[in-house]
Image 1 (tube, rainbow, N blue to C red):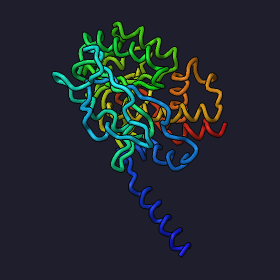
Image 2: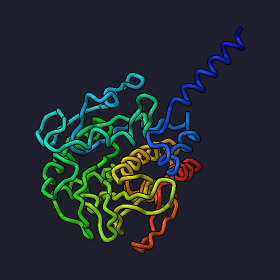
Image 3: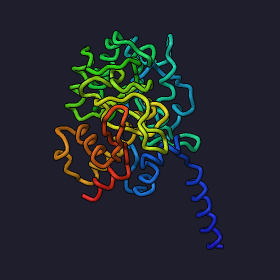
Image 4: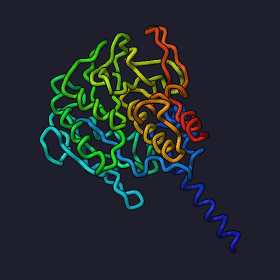
Length: 314
C-alpha cells in the first residue's frame, strides 16, 4: 500500500511539472531560460522577493493573470497612474498594450510561466499609448520618478520601459526622462526598452535610444539571425517576434541573474560600476555572438543558462 501511495505521489508531481509550460516555449528555449529553470530548480527562486515595474499604457486589471495569488502573494503588488496621478492604471484613449506586456516576464497562471514567474509586478500607467511621441516624456518622467521614490518600499529591481516612438534615432533625444534614467542606473535598477519593430538598421526607437536605458533588440526565435530594429546602441538581442517581447524576456532574465549574484556572492563590481551595468556586461560576455551584415555590427544574444553558470561557479 505504501509503495502504491509513493508511486501515486510521484505521478502527481510529474503531472504538475508537465502542466507548467513556458509562456513562449521556442523563445525561452533559445535564450537558455528553460534549461536555467531545470538546472537551478531548488537553488534559485526565479523572481521571488523582487518587483518588476511595467511602465506602459495601462492595464485591464480584471484579467485573471493579474488577479493571481501565488503561495499567498498577489502577482500585482501595486498600481499607479502617472498620467492622472491616481492608483487606477486602466487603459484610456488608445491604450491597449500594457495588459499583455507582463506575460513573457512574469505570468504564473493556468500552467503558463514567464521568465521570472515568482516575481511581483508594479503596473504604472505612464502614457496614453505605447506607440508614443517625444512629448510623452513628461508623464514618463513622472512614472520614472515614482519608481525612484518607491523602489525600496516595493522591492523594485527592474523596469520594463515599454513604449516605442517607431522612429529611427541614431542619436539620443534629450528630454526630462534622462535625469531619471541616470538616477535609476546609479541605484543599480535595471531599466530597458524595446529597440522597435521596423527593420531599421541606422537607428532605434526612443526611449531605447537614451543613455542609461538598455536597448533590447531581437533575433528570430530558433535562429541567431538579427531582425527588426538595430543600431550600435542595441546592447542585447533576445529571441522574439517583437522587441517588446524581447525586452520583457530580458527584464525577467535580469531578475534571475540578480538573485544568482546575490546568492553566490559573485564579485560583480569587476563587471560594472553598478549592479545594472554589471548584469548587462555579464549577459554580453556570456551570450552568443551574432554578426549582422546589414548593419555591420556584432551583438550578444541572451543565454541565461550561460550567465548563471558563470556567476554560480564563482
